Length: 279
Ligand code: KIV
Image 1: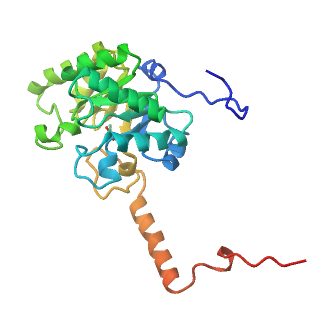
Image 2: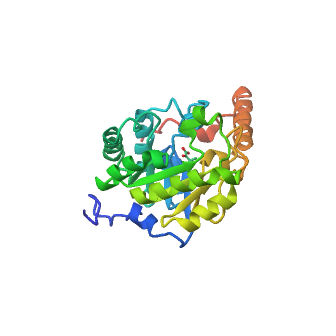
Image 3: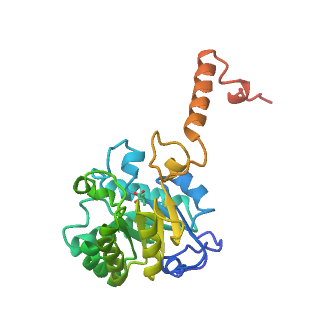
């Protein structure tokens, strides 16, 4: 691959799945979601991994769950995020129904995502039940980030978005899920909404980086949904820290705009085009 772009500029090297895999036990991995080019451009300066999560169904489309999200939706936004970023590893979620039938179906879907977005890895949900599929994909050149604990695509089976492993009696299958995805070749694993000591224990036990969301500060990295941490989502889970309040800031700006349009103070003379003087 050329070290230079077509315009002769040195190409910016993107982080790869093996780069992230090598961060086990090292500097914390910073990951956020993005679904479009402008936010990807900002995140790219600060994040190691940008996740084009299927949470876009809720955030961008106002859906109740991630179940209705389609592969075309993921590919469109994945492409936008790739155009907006240069350095971060971009990981695109495989949506519900696009990979569970067979390992062949998963490969066909993952290949479409890699070819049509140019992203560096895919993420899929499930532990032991997806291990054979993860092995099939990784042996064929598809880097896989796994996702265990609360897996939102199984919300109907789980009976809601509930933290997992709060009773120690439930730990064994969750630990077995984490071990299974490691053995199958995943380069990292998201631990979502797990009891804190369980997430810390899994992080100690497995040889790949764990990325926590509602999990533990001991995880090798952390991820949040961008709109949740920006205070734009009307509601966010307990584990989200809101770093700013974009919702009220946008409302104040829109309200000022509406008032100025109604009172004809916008546009001002500086926002309109004068006729060019001749001669
Ligand atoms: O879809 C998503 O945003 C995710 C994160 C919550 C990890 O999977």
